[in-house]
Image (tube, rainbow, N blue to C red; front, side, top):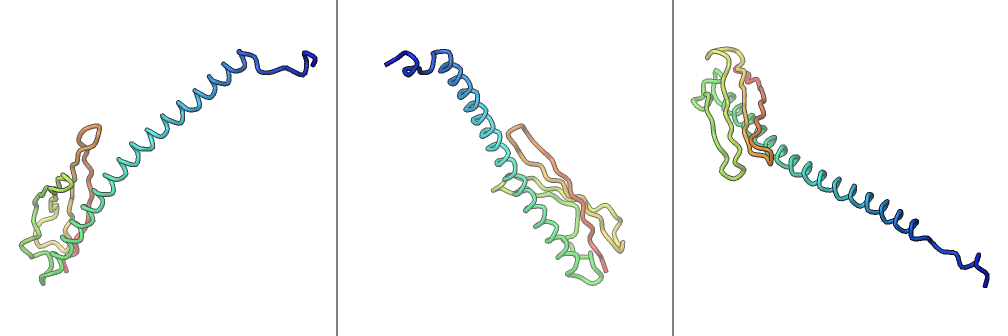
Length: 128
């Protein structure tokens, strides 16, 4: 056999391949950690959205229960904390009583990995 047919990889080529492969694996690991955090954050945002939608529908139902509308005793500024999700809700009526519409500011506070976070949502109740 001659020397040319028995050529292989040099130690430098193998070390370079290992370094390139290591950099690729590290990039993959860091991106999967980021994706995991984003999924967790999205899950909490979904819970807050569900709580907000439920509160808005409850207030709309209370507003429609009486004639004239918005005279139900349940239509008032108040707050609540959900014991399961630990989401604190607060809603405030912004228009004076007897208005044709009632603007409601709903605030939601909840804990994330980076501390407390607050979201605000506005809805309009029609008091016909």
